[in-house]
Amino acid sequence: MSHSCVRGFAIGVLMCLPARGFPQSSITLASALEGRRVIEQMVAAVGGRDALRSIRTIVTDESIRRTSTGQGLNTRAPGVTQGRRTVWYDVAGQRINELRILDITGNQLWDVQRFIGGNAGTVVSWSSMTKDSMPVASLPSQRAAFARRNLLPFLMSLERRPPDAVRSLGTTMIGGKAQDVVGITDVDGAQLTLVVDRQTHLPTRIEQLAISAAMGDTVDVLTFSDYRKVGRLFLPHRRDESRSNETEWEYRVERFEIDTPIADTTFAVPGGLTQAAAPATNVQKLAPDVYLVPGGYQSVFVVFDEYVVVLEAGAGQGRNIIARIREVASGKPIRYVVATHFHDDHLAGLRPFIAEGTAIVTTADAKGRIEALARTRSRLAPDTLDRSPRAPVIEVVEKQRTFKDARHEVQLHQVGPNAHVDQILIGYLPAERILFEGDLLDMASGEPAAGGDDTADFARKLRALGLAFDRLIPVHGEMGTAADLEKSLRRGLARAKCPLGAERRTPCWVDERK
Ligand SMILES: [Zn+2]
Image (spheres, rainbow, N blue to C red):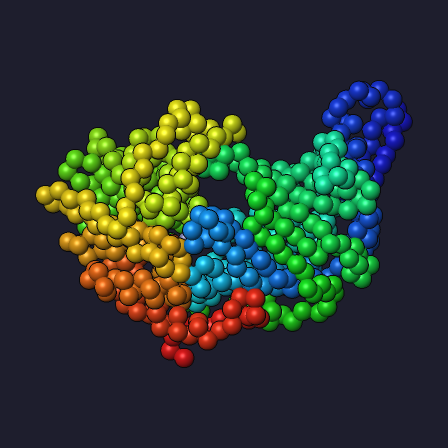
C-alpha cells in the first residue's frame, strides 16, 4: 500500500496517511489538516520556523495599565493603576525571571517577581519581602501560561505538539476582518482557541474558557496587536488581557531584545528575603466557638448558641467554608455571612451562601454587585444557585452592627472611606481581642506588607474606635499580631520613598530597618 507522508511544522513528526482508503468525508481529518495549514501559514508570517528555532534569549520590557471595574474606590469608577513588567527568558536553560512592578488602589505596593528554572520556581512578594516556593506540580502550567501571554515562547513551542493537537474551528469576523480559528491543546493540557488573521496570517488572539460559577460562563482573551519587526521576526507590541469582554490589563512592549546575552545572576533569587513557611490548610480553632478557615482568602466563623456568623467568603471559598462549618456546627443555620467590601474577588464565594438563604451583611455599595452575582448563570458549571435560583438577602451596615448572645459577640465597623475603597467593614471580637480585615493589611507568607495610605488610615481608625487586639486575621495571608500592624506602617514609610509603579524600574525595597 502506498502512503503519502507530510511533514508539518506544528507537528514535527511525519504523518503518513494511506493514499487510498481513508474516508474523505472525515470531519476529524479535514479539521486537523485545515488546522495545520493555518498554523503553518502563521509560523511563516511571524518569521518562519528556522528563525523561531534559533532564538536563545528573549528580554522584554512592558508598560502596564490596569483598569478594573471590580477593584476601584467605588462602583461608579474603575480603579486605574500603572506599572511595568520585565521578562528575561533563557530558552536553552528554560529559565524565566518575570518582574511585575505595580501599585494598586490605596497606594499598596504590588511588586511580584517569579523565578522559574529547572525543576524549581520561586515567587517573591516584594511588599512583604518574602519568597515562596512554587509547587513543583504547578510548574508546567506556569510555564505554559507564561508562554501564551508572551506569545513568542508559545509560537516556539508549537513544534512540540503531537499531530492531533490542532483542529480547525472554522472562520469568524473580528473587527471587520476575517479570521481563521483553530483549537489547540496546549502543552499543559489547556484547551485554547487560536485566532489568526486570514489576510496577514498573524495571530490576533488566544482564548480560553474560564469556567467558574461565580463568574458565569466566561472567556479569557489575550489580544495581540501592533506587530513590528524584531530582527528576523514580526511580533506584537501590544497585548490586552480581558475577561467577559472587559479589558483589565493592557501591556505595551517598550523594549524587545532577542539573543542578547543574559547574565546567570539574573536568574538567581535575591538575598535578604524571608522564606515563607508552608501555609496552613486545616481549620484552626482560635478560641471557643471561633474558627479560622485558611486559604488564599481566609475566613473566620463564629458558632453562636443559635446560629453561625461567617466573616468573608472570598474567591472560590464558599462551598469549602460551608463544609467546614458543617463539621463543627452541624444543625445550626448559617444565618449571616459578612462581605467586607464590594471588590469582586471578595464577593466571589458568596453564591453557595445565597443558595443556603444566608443573609449577606455588607456595605451599601456592594448591594448591586451581589445582586448581579446572584443573577449570573453558568451553563457549563452550574452550582446550587444555578439549579435553584433565588434572590440574595442583603443587610447593609452603614456604620456599625453587633451580633451578640450570652457568650458570643462579633462587632462590625464600617471604616471607610479610605484609600483602598470608599466603604469597608472590619470584624472585631472583643472578648477574644481578635481583629478581622480584608485588604487593609495583607500578611503574605506571614509577613506584613508595606502599608499603603489605606493601612495608615486603618490604623488611625482602630485607635479612634478603641479596638485593642492581640491577633489580626487578614483575608490575604497568615494570622498576625498588633506588632505586625506597626511593622507594616514602618515599611510603609520606606515604601513612600520609592517612585510610583509607572516610574519604578526596580522593586521597592521596604526593609523597615533601613
Ligand atoms: Zn479590595
